[in-house]
Image 1 (spheres, rainbow, N blue to C red):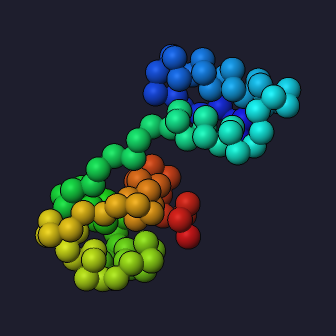
Image 2: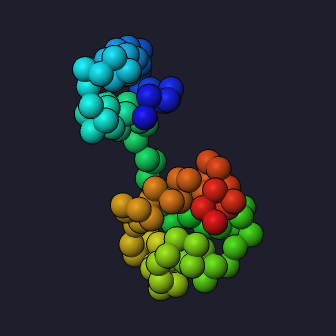
Length: 107
């Protein structure tokens, strides 16, 4: 929790560093520190149909395998790729993780 996170700005970085020090000294509990950690995280980028297709091609996965990795249905991945639906919630976070860290981070 008190690990160095990539902050949005210098102000968030300063607030996070202060909160981490207060947590270390016992003035902020674990739950409050998690809130500070979440505030300082970069937002997850949006994924459109082209970006999902490019990610899948880069990882050399079929739609069925990507669906299994993301724990979603094949029809959902198909709808993402044709633009009928857009990923959200855990699927969006997992797509971002796949893009940044690769397939090994999710498996």
